[in-house]
Length: 370
Image 1 (cartoon, rainbow, N blue to C red):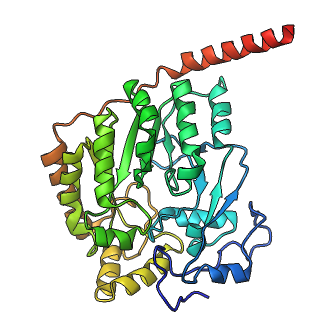
Image 2: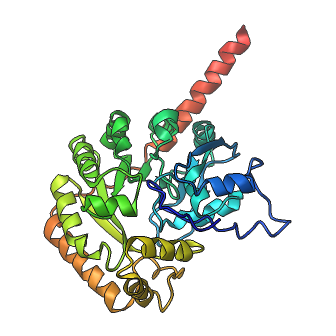
Image 3: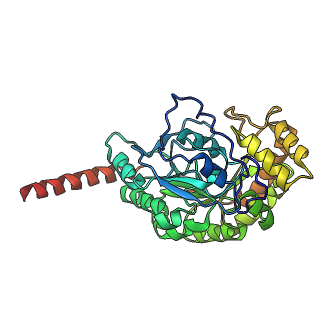
C-alpha cells in the first residue's frame, strides 16, 4: 500500500502511512465517512481524485499558544491541503480527524462552510477583544477548493464589517481575487498578507509544491497587492539545505523588487510522520544527495529531523543554520531596510461591534411591533 509503482504527478506524498491514533479505540474521530481500505489504496494510483467533505465545527477560532508565531488566534476554513508540500507541518493535524498525514492529507479535504457564520458570532460577543487572527494558521485558505466555495472571501467580508484586523498567509495567487475587500481593510490598517515563496526555480517549485502557484504568479501577486496598498511580507519557507537554501538571497531581492515590504524565513523541520514522508520524497526526487540533505537538516536540529522546542525550532541551530540566517539578514538589510511596515489598528473594532449590536437590537424591536 505504501509504495506506488509510478510517481503520482501533481501530488507531494507518495506514501499513505497509517494514522497513529486509530489503534486507540478511545480516540474520538470527528469524521464518520473515513476512507475504506480500498479507497486508501486508490489514493496511490496514477490519477487520484480529491474528495471534499463538509464538516460542522461549533467554533472557528483557535488559540495560538506558540511564542514563535506572531498571532493570538488562527482560523482554518479547510483542513488538509491540495498543494502537496511534502514538508508541511500541518500534515500531522489531519490525523486528529481520522486521516493519514500522507496522501489523505492532500486528497481528503475537510470543508467548513459555516466558518463565516461562526466568525460573525464570535465577533458579536461583547467579551471578545480585538486580537491578531491569522487566515490560515494551519492549511492554506486559498487552496483549490476556495476558487469554487468562496469561504475565505466571505470571512474577509465579516472582518471588514466588524473592522477587525486579520492576517493572511498563502502560497496561492487566488488571493488576487479579493483585492477589492483587502484594499478596503488595508486603507484602515486592518490587514497584511504573507506570500510564501520557496524558490524562483519553477522546475524545483513544481517538485517541492506540486499544486501551488508558480513563482512568476506569486511575484505578480505581490506586485498587485502592493500596488493596491496592501502590505506584503514574503516568507521563504521552508529553507531546505542542498535543495533551495542557495536561493534565499535572490528570493528576498526579487520579492522586494516586486513590492514586498517585509521578509521572514523558516528552516525545514519534519514533525510526526513528515520525516518518513520527506525521506521517501527526497529519495525519489534527489537520489544523488539524499544523505547530504538529511544530515544537514539534522545538524540544525540537534541530530534529529525535527525540533519542537519553542524559540529554536523555526530557525534551527549550528553552523548551517547560522549561514542561512546570515544570508537572509544580508538580503533583508540590502533590499528592505528602507521599506515601511504599517502597524495594525486594533482600536476600530469595539465601537463597530457595539454599533452592530445596537442596530441588531433595533431591528428586533421593529420586528416585534409587527
